[in-house]
Image 1 (cartoon, rainbow over the protein chains, first blue to last red):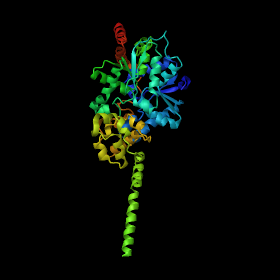
Image 2: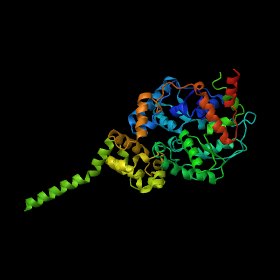
Image 3: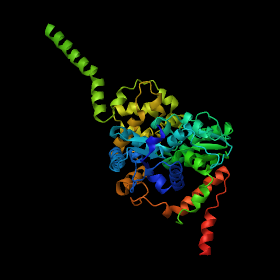
Image 4: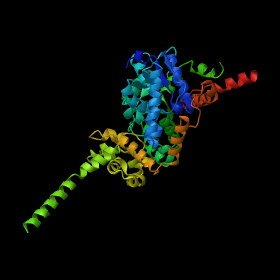
Length: 254
Length: 183
C-alpha cells in the first residue's frame, strides 16, 4: 500500500490498548502525527470481537466486530489502522466484505521505510543495536503479512541497527487463545524456546509487536533470565525521535 | 427357498446402501453445525507436526487433528477432555494443512458449541463474554474511550519502563512532580 492510502484512516485502538497498554496507544498516535498521516478515532471503542469469539460466543464476536466496521463506514473512512494483530486479523476478515482495508501500524512504518521516509538522522537517534523479531501469529498468518520482510526493512532503515532472523520466529509465543489467562504454565513452556532462540542469535532487542505477545515474551524473558529488551515496533520507532521525551512530558499538562 | 434368498439379498443391499451413506449423514450433520470442513480432513496429521501446544503437552492435548476428528460428530465430551481450551489459536495448523482447511475456525465453532452446552469453559472465558456483552469491552469499563490526558500517569510510567529496556532514561515523571510542587 502507498502512503496516501493510509490518509483519513480510523485508528482503531482496541480495548486492551485504549485501556491497558496505554503507552503503545500514545506512541502510535505520536507516530501518525509525526509522519503526518491524518486519522480519526472512534469515540466509543468496543471489543473487536476476537476474544469473545475464541472464548465461546461466536455470535457476540461477529456482532462486536460488525459494530466496529459499521462505525468506521459511518465515519466515512474505508481504512482501519490498528496496533493489535488480534484486532487486525478479526477486522480484516469482516472488513474485506465491506470494502474496508485493515492494516497494522507496522505496515505504515514499512511503507515509510520503503519510500525512505522512516529515518531522519536530524530528528532521530539510532540505537545501534542488534534486533530480532517475533512474528505474531495473527499478524503473520492472520493478516497475511510478510513479517520477515517488514521487520528487516524497518529495522534496516536505521543505519547502525542490525536485524537478525531468529530460528522459529514464526512460532507461537503461547499467550493466545486465552491460554496465558487460564493455563499460564503451558504458556511459559511454549515461550521458553522463543526467548532462548532470540538470545541465541545474540540480539539485544526482541521486537514483539502484538500487545499480548509483548507482555508474555517480556515476562518469559524475565522468568528465564534472558536479559532481552522486548518492545513493539511502534514503540521502538517512537523512542528514536529526539522530541519524543518532550512530547511525553506534556501529556496531561495541556 | 428362492423367495427367502431374494429377501436376504434385498435386505443386504438395503443395509449396504444405508452404510455406504454414513459419510453423507456425518457430512450433513457436521455441516449443519458449522463443521463442514472437518469432513474434508484426510488425517495426514501435518497440523499436529506444527502445533506448539501438542509439542508442549504431548498426547494430553488432542491437537488440531483431534479437533477435526471430534468436530465431525460434535463429540463435545471428548473435546472437553482433550483440552480444546488449550489451543492458542496460532493458526499454524491452518497454514500446514495441505487441503487448506481452517482448523482454527473449526476450533472456534467447537468452543461455541461447548459453551452452549456449558462444557469446558474456564472462568476467564466466561468473564470475558459477560463483560463484553454488558460493557462492550472485557475490562468492565465504560464504553466511552478514556482520553489520553486521563491516562497521563499510566502512560508515563509505562514509557519510562520501555525507555529503560532500550537504555533511554526518560525524565518525564519527575518533571510533572516538580511542576506540581512548584505550583
